[in-house]
Image (cartoon, rainbow, N blue to C red; front, top):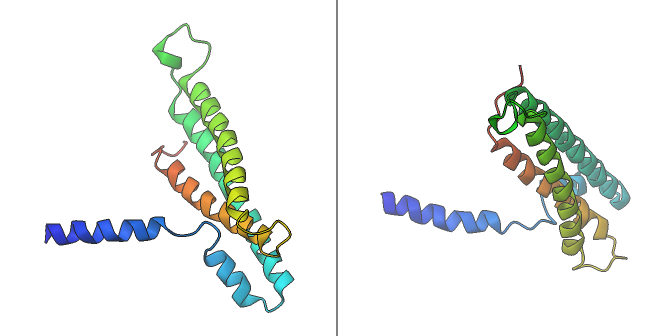
Length: 149
């Protein structure tokens, strides 16, 4: 039974990992709900904006949680002028800036399979950003920070 379970997981994980960054349920629902193609593109763009706002809110909340849960002096040195939370949050925010640059460049490269003048070009970028935002939100959750009090 154990071998069967391991085999099933080994076969399922690559299938999940192969999901295309340029496709997803948001794009599908926008095109199903809107017969007018420009309206479908606007729908997907709005979903991308909402995804970006949700990620921004998560990052803001995470910074609060970092600072609230890391109040001691940096590196445990009483002479430190910064708390470990201040250093941690600064490094976290620097990482977010780098990650956003990565997201932008990766999504541009994914959309490059189309001509820049193609109608779907921007929708590929929008869906890619939504997908990467979801993945990144899960990564942030893996930090395992307790809530800020």
